Structure formats: C-alpha cells, structure tokens
Amino acid sequence: MLTTDRMALVLVVDDDADVRASVTDALLAEGYEVAEAEDGERALDQIVRRPPDVILLDLRMPRWSGRDFLEALRHARPARALPYPIVVVTASADIARTATDLGIRHLVHKPFALDDLLGKIRQALTAG
Image 1: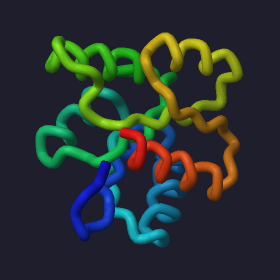
Image 2 (image 1 turned 120 degrees about the vertical axis):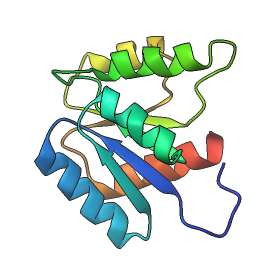
Image 3 (image 1 turned 45 degrees about the vertical axis):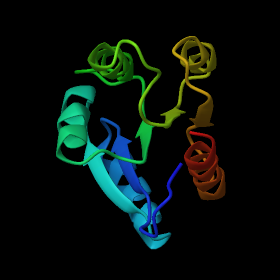
C-alpha cells in the first residue's frame, strides 16, 4: 500500500509499444508516475533503478515473458510473496487461470476500459 504523499509509480511491462504508450499517457493524465519495459528482463532492470508501487504485466511477450519475469522476481526473494502488487493485462481468455496459478489476484482483459484498468490499479495498491 502506498503510504506517502507522492503519486504511485506504475511499471508498465508490455512488448507492444502502442499499448505501453497508450497506458502510459492515460496513467500520466491521472497523475501517476510511470516507468516502461518491453519485456521481463528490462522490467527487472527498471525495478533495480527504482522499485515500483504496482506493476502492469502482460504475460505473453516473445522475449522474456511475464511468467519468466515472475519466476525471476520470486527467485530474488524466495522466502517471500511477490514484493509488488501486480495487475496482469492480457488479451488471452485462458490467462485468468494461469494468472491465478501464479498468485496474481488482479486481472484486466484487453481491450479494456480505462476506468477498469484504473480501478484495478487502485485495488492493487490498496490490497497489496
């Protein structure tokens, strides 16, 4: 949960540059700070630079998938749960079960309404 006066930092992880740009523009308009990564490996680099308050994660990416990213993140902290709230953003209908199996509680299906995405981000920030 975000407990300071600053706006939350959202890390947007998606291989589609247009999706990243659209989501980033919408989040900035809502006052969020935003960092971007086009795959899981670059997302880990972003986290080292500045840990996010919440991560928007596409699970299906060609290079380092969202699953690869989650495994690396868990490997870095094996005795703990995921250190950041994660919202999975996906176009795949079958990904809900995969997300649940990975311990993800927040899911948004593409195409999504901006209000739905913002609601999930707020929910993830509040619930952790």
